[in-house]
Amino acid sequence: MSTVGLRDVSKVFPDGTVAVDGVNLDIGNGEFMVLLGPSGCGKSTILRMIAGLEDPSIGEVLLDGEPAATLTPRERGVAMVFQDFALYPHMSVGDNIGFPLKVSGQANREDQVSEVAGALGIGDVLARRPGQLSGGQRQRVAMGRAIVRRPRLFLMDEPLSNLDSQLRGELRAEISSLVRELGVTCVYVTHDQAEALTMADRVAILRRGVLQDVGTPTDVYGRPATLYVAAFLGSPRMSLMEATVKVVLDRYVALRLGDQELHIPWKDLRARAVARYHGERIVVGVRPEALLPVPMDSPGDVLRGRIRHMEHHGHESLAFVDVGATAVVVDEMATPANGRMPATRGLRKFIDRLVGSPAQVAVEERAHHAEDGGGGRHSRKPAELVVRLAPYPGVNAGHPLAVAVRTDALHFFEESGNRIDVGHR
Ligand code: ATP
Image (cartoon, rainbow, N blue to C red; front, side, top):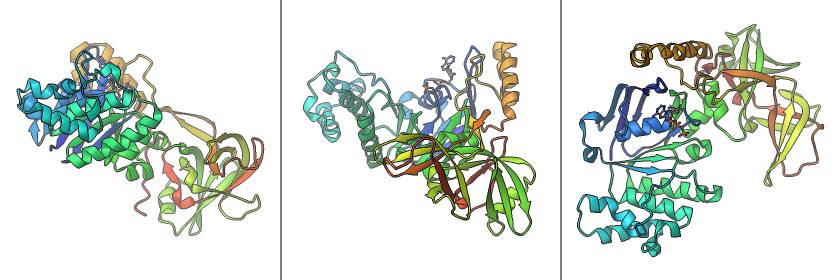
């Protein structure tokens, strides 16, 4: 078992790419930490720095409080599992699993291999070669090879992304319960938010090398720190709409969404927080679970609109309803046009030394992005509320629909992208 600490860690590659930018993160003993973000956000680079395969350009990685740079690979006690399994094709399954034991010259290898293989349900294929296995079996072999080393730390880089979705679902549960049973600290990289939310003790969400939010799945889903995190987590995604704030003192705060209004009663603590934005525009986030279809003439906090399109998922149907509001669309990947990650000013000197003038471009990019407060550069289009309906309901595209809105479940963000802190509820 092991703890991991990242202290102001940045990674700039020799061509000036800033892959990781000022990340601070503490991972506890036995914790299952998932690093989540879109392709290119720096997840694998962080994992590789923890493994000692890359050195941070700035900052420090600590393992059990010791600077990792001072530890030998053996002292690090790290086992990695990769997306492509990285098995030796010419070796049997048994030899693949036992390989780390052979390298370290351990005795009674066969016993250990069959114990691990038995636990993973691949005890009957030990004599086969990897090419004679299914994808799921190959991933179990890769897990077995990691487990047999009795590591202090598992590092897993998208280990399920080459598998079909049903198998991914099964192995998700298997991996997380196995890792917890072993009590080994695990850092798990994925771009799949459902995987992150179902497997993690805590999730760390990255965007362009910058850490956006860290917390339990319930925290980051229920109280996303930025618009970017709000937009990234949840399926269906949160609807994000522009709203103008109007305060009617001691009574309510009105949120104007196109031609319609929602009212947050003054006694709701959140009304006071939002009231600071009187006369300004903010972003209101609403997830499907905050919406309930009601008759068109229902009173109260109701939004009315027309169904733009439907999606039928078997167990439920989703109606995408145009309520006349303007959507805020978060640009979730947005690799800068020059292909470089933007850099914070703290990195400027370092990059300047490294690559000279091109770094300037990256830094200027960052200044531009700073305007969005790390929440996501976003663009605008008509908003759609996503409303859950019974399977194959008697409505179609073009039909009017009214939904009651649970105003206590709304999320509020500044236009810059940062969450409006409404205190604890
Ligand atoms: P993916 O999910 O696609 O693997 P990731 O979030 O793991 O993405 P990284 O592989 O950490 O992202 O890469 C972060 C950024 O660093 C990307 O822009 C990538 O192109 C860049 N990068 C990675 N390795 C190098 C390298 N050796 N030299 C230059 N740039 C690199």
